[in-house]
Every structure is written in structure tokens, then in C-alpha cells.
Length: 189
Image 1 (spheres, rainbow, N blue to C red):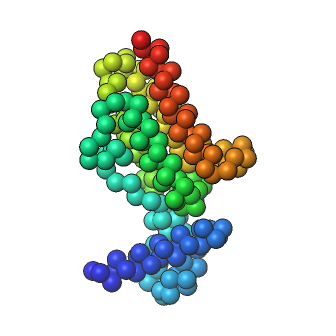
Image 2 (cartoon, rainbow, N blue to C red; image 1 turned 180 degrees about the vertical axis):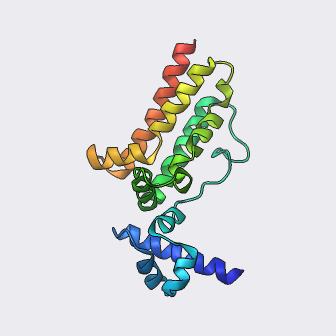
């Protein structure tokens, strides 16, 4: 069992390394770098798509707020934004690969983490103190606004189109999340 985990982890690490070097690797390339036979590699990842999906960073659970989340909604949204931007900065190559997969209409949604709605769940968790304070439709709208502002999609636009450096892009994302929240709070009062 441990050998299987080591083999899989080796293939994922090799794929991540190649992604960070600017290569979108095939299963064969990952196998070669991981020093695993190609036949074995295909048992773990039957396609390039499966290989790339396997590199996506796993942020577990229904919350990014930790064991003892703050009660204040501003602190919760700031913590969510900080966790999201830290994950993007630490896993940019993998997230860009997943974004490319998510744009391919032939890729089934269950194979793409970006299509599974985890980010929406995390935003809902951050906004929990506003549930019942905001009308349900406005709560949902704010959830979608913050989720859209906080993802790899926005980061890619800021860096690739907007020309900002990565740290500045993370700051813009964090401030957008806060600004969206402040606007909703002002409208509610």
C-alpha cells in the first residue's frame, strides 16, 4: 500500500515539476521524470487529463477558516481571501493546468475540481454570519461575486492581461473580496 502511494506521489510531484517548468506533460514525460515505467504510470493515470487533474491541490473540508473561525464576517472573508490567494500563489502552475482543463467542454465536470463548486461552499462558510441578515437572493449573489473574485481565473487575468505582478494580483483579489462585502453590508444597513 505504501509503495502505491509513493508511486502515485512521485508521478504527481514529477508532473508538478514539469508544469512549473512550463511543460504540460504527457503521462510518459511524468513517468520518465519520476523514474516509473510508463505501463505503471498509465495504471495510475490513464490519460494526460487524469494526470493533470491529479496534480490539483486539495484544500480539504467545507471551510478554509480553520478550527476556530472568527465570528466577525469581515475577518472571515479576509481569512478566506488570504487562504485562497496563498493557495493560488503556491500552486499556480497546477491551477492554471486545471483552468485549461475546465475550459475544455469535452472534459466531464467531475474530472475538474474548478467545476465542483468547492469555492462557493467556502465563501458561504465565510459569509455565514450574514445568512438570514441578507435576503437569500442577495446572500447567493454576494457568494457568487466573492467566489468569482477570488479564483485562479481572476488571478490569471490580473497577471496575464492586467500586467500586475503575482503579489499585487493577490492583494487585488483580497481587496476585491473585502470591497464586495463592504458594499453588501452598506446596502443592508
